[in-house]
Amino acid sequence: MEDKKFMTLEELTAVAQDKYLEIMKENRAKDILRAIGLFPDQTITNDVLILAQKPEATCVKRMKEWNFYKRVVKKAEKAIKVVSHHIENYNQDFTDENGNVYSQEMPKLICDVGFIFDISQTEGKEFDYLNSNKETIASHFEVVKKALESTAKEFDFEYVNQDEKSLIDYENKKVLVKDGLSVNDVIQELIEDVSEILLKTRQEEGLKNIDDFERNGVVYAVNSKLGLDLPEYDFSVANLTDEGLDQLKGNFQKIRSVTKQMLSNVENSIERAIRNLDKKMAEEQAKADEQQAETPKEQPAARKTRSKAKAREAEAESEV
Image (cartoon, rainbow, N blue to C red; front, side, top):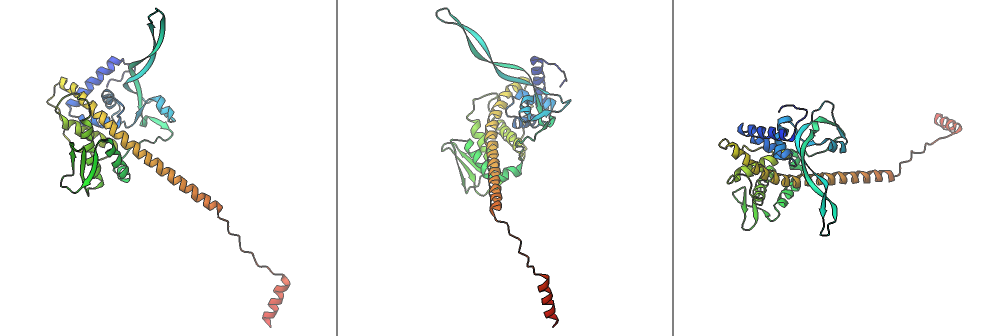
């Protein structure tokens, strides 16, 4: 991406479109899916812009947001340019039936060039954000399991003796998971099944009849964020024209919507579990400190003393 200090919104959008087509034609859809997992609050356009300017980024925010968390941008760091969407209020004049003119505040969506920074470009107070891995998921297995199950709200989950690792019974709204699977396998089956269920609730967007692309895309994005093994899915779209690739953005948007919902539930659940554990440990430590403070200190044993006279008498008796 050309490093221009000043860039209009139109220029930035054009750069993003060109970069998107370049990435897709190079069969790098996985890069976009990984970015969707890492930055679920961003847009596809911004994912592409982040990939073009800071492909190693893992956690991005505006300068004001970093300042809120007591972190500052390092000197000489260049901002990542993105398309910023925000609401601004403005006054609009109206005329009532009597011809009286009055002003009313109205919201308006503003699009402009925005600037964000990756956490690696900042310094200051430690910023805790979920940068998970298989060990984290395993240590909070029950929490993650319940979070995923609750994301598919209308479905019941049962763990039964069956040959298949999992089955979705849409008629009875049940997900049947094979009993006895490993922790990693259970989590993986839940991610795949919940992805499929949620995608069916989304409005049809983009290209049709590419359900596998969407489901596999959600799984890849979620796994990327949670630090789980990345499946060897084929996301090749070499047969698509530029127009087809542009339509595919709608499918990426569906993937983003489901990914954000799943990650939000899982991450919030893990963070609550960690906070509760920290709170419990702090309470136990405070209780232990209190008990220690209440325990009376042992008094040093009284030293037996005797006068020099008695000592001499005892010495004399021993010589007799």
